[in-house]
Amino acid sequence: MQQKIKSILVNAPRTEERPIGSAVWNSWKSRSLSYLLDKRTIRLVSGASLLFSAPKSQWIQVFQRMDISSQLEESLREIVELALLACVVDRWSFLIDRLMLTSYEFVTTSRLYNEVHNLVQRGCREETINSKEKGIIEYLEVFLHNRLYLLWELSPVLAAFAIPSWSNLFRNYLTELDRQVTGDFSLTRSDSSTKERKKYRECDVAERIWCLHVCHVGGSDVESGSFST
Figure 1: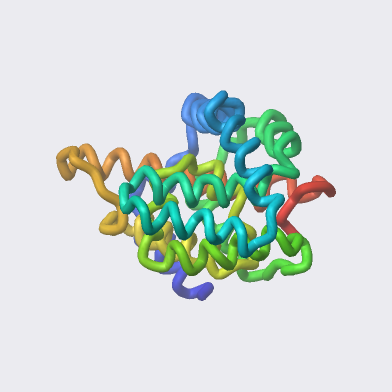
Figure 2: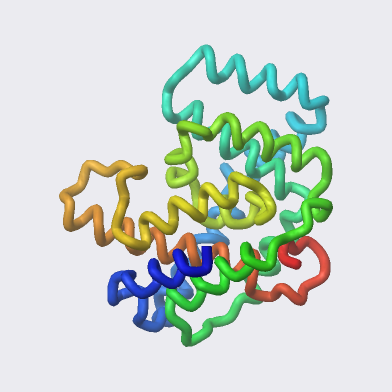
């Protein structure tokens, strides 16, 4: 794994080695906070809290009906979003505070990327997540088996904060980011031209790496609510 990471970083585009500008950093921070504080998101958080207070068998039945009755992308995406929001509903204020306290650092995206990978190398304790969240993640690992692209249709901050680093889903997410760092955007879709799509996706990958770093690495000394070890 370490050799693979080194190879990816060596072959990463030159833009990966340029320090992140303060304007870009602040725009990512602002966009993440906007999602968490958006009225629609707050409504979904309330709905997720209510839905997942029921036994696992009941909320699975609700999702199965949604999945069977409609194959529309919007419905599938909403299932994933509700499930991920349910994983962080008890830490909502903490997540907002963590983002608010994140200050600019003169670093490259590749450094953040490497530090996130080092987290996986160290490993994380599964017992840091409760049984409800574990059940949700296990469900998503099956549901997203052939639909991982749905994560790229949601806010980067949600995937970063909701998917625990001990899970297979986190590793699948990181593996796809590995591919995109090297320029393989086959999982994601866009109607724009190849040049425009490449530029947009490179920015999206950098933002997702930043969100992962803020959640799992940055401020890892914070005691409560952190996934890091």
